[in-house]
Image (cartoon, each protein chain N blue to C red):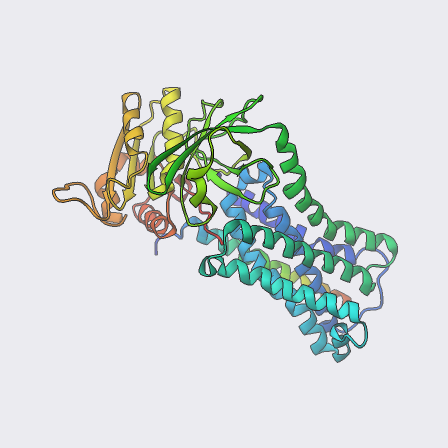
Length: 440
Length: 34
């Protein structure tokens, strides 16, 4: 997983700030219109800054493989979330500050002065509020992932389109023509990126179809789906990475979901995903017909065991076992001798999916599996309850705490607990690897 | 105080970047109104 020096974090942050400030910078190049009061110009600058940040939002989620591997998809999503809220505040402050500075700016929203303009700007404002509101409320409103994802892209494209047109039509900083063209290029580029991500790349995936080779039930709501590439070799991946999978005839289908690869990175002729039904499309996994088509985009993500780590402690909660399964299976196939402690937190032994399969890898692995049960059966003598500092101190050998990597995957509360416990036990942050996806 | 988890640090850095962008907007306005 990506760990970074202070210098590279500063460099990446500076690059992000520069990208967001690009529209402001372009507005200052060449002959300038007469300056106005501070608050008027500040209101304008907030619009440019907000539009620049909104544009950068498209790049953060464009699934650029190099960015995803270097920075981590979860980090990109965390930044996307914070920046989305701040960009909205800046964009909404743009008219508010302008109108407070000069009441005449209110005419931009007055349909009697210019009906199409007032309609477009009101639409963009509402779309922006809806865009952020739906994302923050998705889980509470139980909006299905695929429905939210399509709406999110459509609203974002609409807002960006109106923002770009607005900059050109206000025509204060978009003259001479070449400055306007540069602003359109910078603010329009995100729309091109969206088209590339949502249309061009899925179409390219048509030439690399997969076939559903097996759908295996583990227990109620937990399935393993195996895919085999048809007429091509599936791309190499690192154990711990994930991919976006579309089931069905068209790669353009809306039902594209990110799933962690659970199989060995040494088996590129067959990749497996172990999936837990979460109430949306994933609930229909069991009914996917064997032999049907699927499309895979990826791999992505930076979660995994660093090559130089002398050993690892894997802490999995529930379905968070899937990246650990890929790591262990790959180590097994490669004859990797490094010592591994797998701490597997589940409600009961029956809900410890894949435990038997992973336990069987012990013939070729230096593997110790420790189950932590929330609801233990009578006579259980192993650890119980939540992951705490004391529990980890009892399970993990002092030597491992000093040198091994700690990989954590599971539900958010469990990840918080495990990460805080590892930090409290003195495990350096550079040795703790956790990937979080529950952003919306 | 124990060190903060990684995702908390990521959020802090992202917020810091947002503050820097807002500061650049203020600098833009100061430059244009001076």
